[in-house]
Image (cartoon, rainbow, N blue to C red; front, side, top):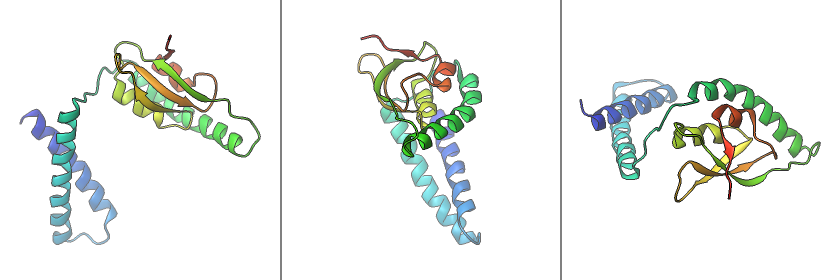
Length: 154
């Protein structure tokens, strides 16, 4: 099985599984309709992947990031709640950070953006390891430290 066929198959299974979980009574007709829709979406998702040239990138620090993520989510959600309720003034803003060699830009950006503490806005034009992020606070989070992120030098 080719790489594209494997990618389409994985997308198909994931999308169809989500569909079956979300519908009420599971009938043959519902599964057929869901499979047809999931197949179209899987083909489109693979076409987007090929057109964008996206690749997962290196997995360096992935385990550390996954282990740090739940704590970062809780801590940063608390910081966000305090900032929203006015108990603490948020000192965040936009800045640029650099991912270390061996860390995939796509998955690292997704992990960073999956907490309230930072959101990846853009990749660098010349160097895709430089990310423009919006931070809730003025210091790097534990998740950023787990990923080995450093401040980008201008």
